[in-house]
Image: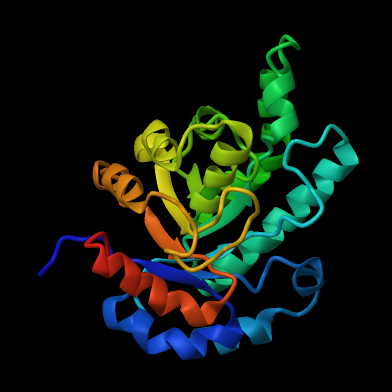
Length: 272
């Protein structure tokens, strides 16, 4: 039996049925992405959960959801906006409890603009951290109570350390770091950020979740692995040095290519 890590996938209800047997065969990591929209969270999502739970009969792997993110930042200066963001995150955690999901992806507040401007403004980084605490405090308590991990995903982040510092600032095992390989590679190629494996090594064992997708370094492609130019050997060598065993989630635009990407990694001898 190989010691190579096992990759899973980000799926919706529409694609879960197609990949169900593949997931259950190795109890692969799973991320459900049906709950990112306000319309779903404000509506009656319980029938959707019932259908998902039926499809997942026999599944015992690590499962989570992608949390809501459209149209907001977790570091808004406006207290009214922060209240809405808190509401959305709590709605997402309510879904997590109903599904017995144990992670929820939350988007990082750090931007290309903030990277180039925070240093010239004394206290600006600390202000971002404080606003994130105002927004997330209740969600962190809720996540702790239901055994869910809020994983902070890089979006525009140019400094890999920022999310780790933010996660650590909560002093809670319910907050940790996520990595999106495509976002990191775009930041590296287009904005001079470190390469993807550095994002892994700087997060260290605070890294608990990874979105695997390939890109050209210009746009957020979510291509099948091997179609872009990410150096996958260096990424998986860095992951192999961790003890945190992050969830490895293929997050592709074309869900029909998920098994192709898993096969690509297997052919390289990097994962199964």
